[in-house]
Length: 299
Image (cartoon, rainbow, N blue to C red; front, side, top):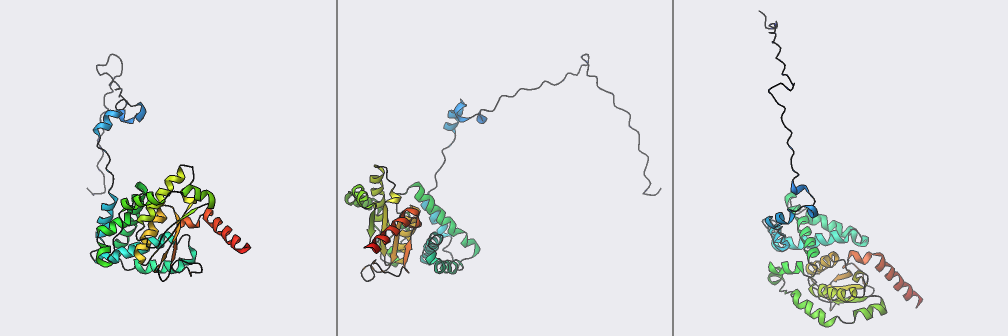
């Protein structure tokens, strides 16, 4: 018989039908009624919620400084620690400056692209993580010199520049002793200026900002509209650390990189070495600068 000829199928006998009458010995299965899962009930209406919360372990908070340093160390296998730190700070500063400060955009964009090309694709993906941990740390606790603390922990200042940053607790104490007539000066002039001619990572400025902020909030004034920061440092890396932290804290201000004694902040500067925080370009401060210029012209 050829393989393409099919064998006739055997006819199957029809199965006997099962009677569903009441006389049938087979009874229908009973439908089970399930009780609702207490975990699906809203927290406020669930009587077991509090008991479950006691059993469940508490959520651990991330240690931003530890996470930051762990990621940072992954970049030091092929590159020197100081180079990685400096590159991170410069690129982060450029990323904050470029969206609003168009006068410096081209120069800083070229600098950013030149730096990032030094690292392979895996390493490039680590820099946004460093920036993210910086942002989260300052959101969780704005009253700290996050970058300055890490800078000193890794001995980057003492080994390369002989630098030592003021601990934030001491800066806060100094701020409480010096910041007093904030409200009266704001009522008179519209804003106050907090300056530091050797700003470092910004510890003293951050402390001064928060001391002034507390006094302004007591009279329902937004510190972002009434505090201007003017700072300077000869070391570009630490000056940009200060710039990054002030930018993330939402403070209006500018930082000049240069020697305070030979190149102090003055009218008529070329602005080449100036870094303006994003808040400096807000409507409030832009209007205030325009009014100042108009007053100067009328005089």
